[in-house]
Image 1 (tube, rainbow, N blue to C red):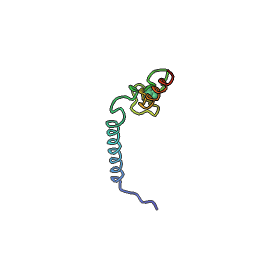
Image 2 (tube, rainbow, N blue to C red):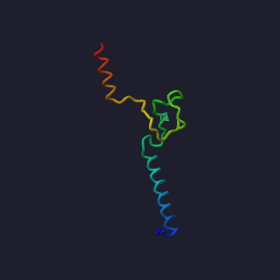
Image 3 (tube, rainbow, N blue to C red):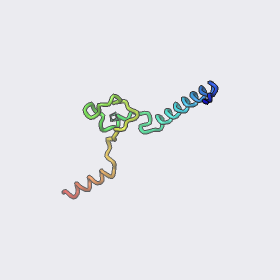
Image 4 (cartoon, helix red, strand yellow):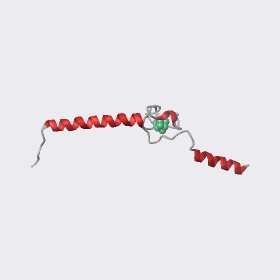
Length: 86
Ligand code: SF4
């Protein structure tokens, strides 16, 4: 036999869920990577030939995001290679 709750309980749960998800979204946008800027501004694929996503150039979240800057460890490795080649 199925038990049902009063309608106000369902409504209360829905309101709490919507408030919670809204708060999480606001928190993620305000503190996440990019902090209010669009990810595409710093992405190495930010041109029409390398990125065909509809979100470009105003993506807040993107799994294909790659920074334009080369990590410092890679920079050092490149410098070392160029020194050995001379
Ligand atoms: S890969 Fe993602 S972050 Fe980079 S330009 Fe395209 S949409 Fe923007």
